Structure formats: structure tokens, C-alpha cells
Image 1 (tube, rainbow, N blue to C red):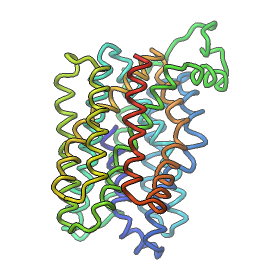
Image 2 (tube, helix red, strand yellow; image 1 turned 90 degrees about the vertical axis):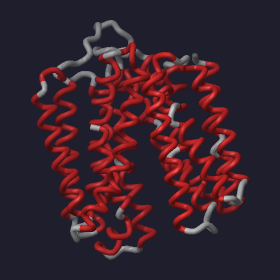
Image 3 (tube, rainbow, N blue to C red; image 1 turned 135 degrees about the vertical axis):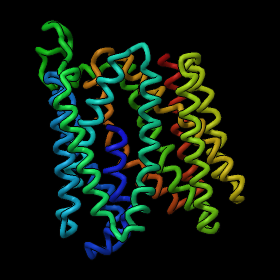
Length: 371
């Protein structure tokens, strides 16, 4: 599920230039509009859908979400104008969020004693899915094909996965709650959400998980702006160093996670991330920045799976509500890059990069306070 989603959602942003030319829109508007379109509908509907989903079978919720995802991805491939593409991407956002949440929640809670390992493997699958996008686009370009064919392939993969999930009776389960449970089956969706957001430990770890998004593509984007005087090859090397560190860190974490104290790992990783980020903000040397990006990628790779595992552990057996709280923080994912962009515009890119220190600091505080 993770690989299929990364493939489907990565094709359009990675082909923003080609999309802009095909649909006759300015490249800058296309790039910004693509990212905004993925979130514009999900902000409003994903959280209540996820809260409601624990009342239905995981098999059908997942299969339905994947079916919608496949249909809108195919629709995006056929779109003849920017409005049609924007509508498809807007529908893709909540369909993707629901499908991912259903799969991840079921996997994590099926083996609650292995939450950290499961989430590490899911993050590793996502990283490999990210790597698959440029490889697929390069292969299609070599054949004289483009982003529309890539979307058709992604839609076909999602449709196949929907059929697999819909026919897998092992997924035909839902959480059984007692009628008197707080935020349980007898409660309305609004009451369940109020209960979940009132669980302070869960909210703290969901906020920590949201902060990790600043250490992903957002950080890389501003780091590349900081290295604007470097050559294209040097910048590509720096991004490659970050990717290598990220994937390598996930491989190491997956192998040793059961032997580690996750609280100590979170605290130590936050310190290393802060030091690496400060180095990137202050240096003008491409080699130094590349080394710092490698170290940052490796150390930050541990943060999201371990923080997410603690979020699930904060409300055991209720993965739908955990993901609903995480979805409720989606406005942060949209507004934070805009705020950082404003800081970069008014005070310079180094200041924007240093502002990202709020991520490791916030995660370290969560690890210290909400063990």
C-alpha cells in the first residue's frame, strides 16, 4: 500500500514541468497548485472519515479507499485541463489518507509488541517508493512516454490492490468496543474525536510526528535554496547523500530496533539532527553540507517511526482514532512551509533552516515528558 501510494502521489509533483506544458499553465502555479490540491479536501473530510472507520470492516474501508484512489488517479491521467486535474488530486488526498491509515493501523495493531519494527518497515517501503518514481519516469521517457502513462500504471496497481484487499477475509475485522467505553462504539464521531484529542499523550506524540515532516522534503527544498550557488550536479549529490542516509538509517533501525531503548534513540537522534541542521544553515561548502545532509537523513530516519509507534501505544487498539488525530494536524503541513518561506524571504534562507530546529526540539521534549 505504501509503495503504491508513493508511486501514485509522486508522479505528478515529479513531472510538474511536463504537466504545466501539457495543460498550458505557468510552471510555478502548477507546482504550487499540485501540492495544495492534494490537501484541500483532505483537511475537511479525512479526520471524520477515519474516526468513523473503526465502526466498519477494515477490509471494505481499505478496498473502497483504494478503489477511489485508483479511479481518481486514472482520471488524472486523462485530465484535459488544470481544473479536471485539480479535482482528481483533491479527491486523491483523502482517498490516499484513508487507505494508508487503514493498512498501517491494522498492521501496527496486529502485533502491538512490534509497533516500532512495523512502522520502520513501512517508512522504508515509503522511501523505496520515493526512489521508484524517478526510475519509472526515466524508463518511460526512454520509451517516449510520459506522466500520463505513469499515472495509468499507478492506477492499475491501486485497482489490483483494491481487489486483493477486498477479497482478503483476513482483513474482515473491526474493533469491538464495549457500549460503555469512553469514545467507544456508542459514541458519535464527534464524541470519539473529542475523546481522542483529549488524550494528552496521544496528542503530544501526534504533534511530534507532524514535526518530523519538516525534516523531509521541506528541509531538502530549503537546503537546496541555500546551496543555490552550487552546480546542478553538486546539488544532486547533496540530495543523494540525504536519501542515502535516510534509507541506510531505516535499514539499521529495522535490524536493531528491538534491542534499543526508543526514548534514548529519540533523544540522541534529536541532538544529532539539531547539530546537522545547524551545520547546513551555517556552511557555504557543498561537501560539508552534503555530509551534514547524510548524517541528518540517517538520524532523522528514526524519528517518524518511533514517534508514530508511541502515538499508537497512547491509545492501544484504536488505530483509526490515532490516525484521525494525526489527520487533524494536516493544516500544519500546509502552513509550516509557507511560514518558512516567509522567513526565508524576509530574513534569509539560513534563518528558515534554523527555524526548523523546532522539530528536533519538540520531539526531544515529547520523549522527555511523555515516555
